[in-house]
Amino acid sequence: MSVGIKISLNEGLFHRDPQDTTLGRKIIKHSIILMDEIGFESFNFKKLAKRMESTEASVYRYFENKHMLLLYLVSWYWEWVSFLIDMNTMNVTDPKRRLNIIIQTLVSASKDNPSIEYVNESILHRIITSEASKAYHIKDVDEENKEGFFYNYKKLSEKVARVIIEVNPKFSYPRALASNLFEMANNQIYFARHLPRLTDIEVQKNNFEEVEKMLKYFVHRLLTK
Image 1 (cartoon, rainbow, N blue to C red):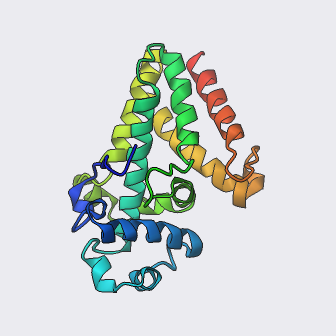
Image 2: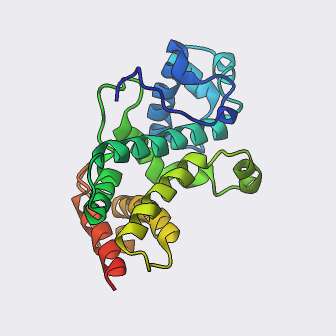
């Protein structure tokens, strides 16, 4: 993927799509770095503007508030994973192999892609594991769902669920398994880094081989019963 390929997101997430301008891409770049450094709770547009050597007003021209910015970043990542799955499974006909590639992609999507200079996927992934649930575990989730703000996540989950059904048409919970693959991967990485007694895996820097092994273990155990 290159800068010329645009990630398609719900227009309700922003006033102006930051992917379209130099300033907007600068907002994405520095918001990822700053949010990773200080956390979502401490993050605000005043601090972001200072980091960018710009003004709060310039940020507000793109996003209504920091919640919408977080949701934009999370949605960008979901769509990025979906894009990688399509690329990595192209021309792969065997559903079991496709599912293995999908699991591998979920883990490897966090590797930085230098062709997208305004998004550091490795840093963004740390935000996904620590902050993403705050984008949808909110009081207004039903209203935002009606606006289609979680479409990218649901589309991604549905894509994986269809492959799960191909592997085992009799499996009763393909959507639950698909969404749990994402949540389990992120939660277990977070636990390994911060609450290690809640998991059995270890994460060394950006090496997520144990995560991939664990996901494949659970998936194939469930689907071969």
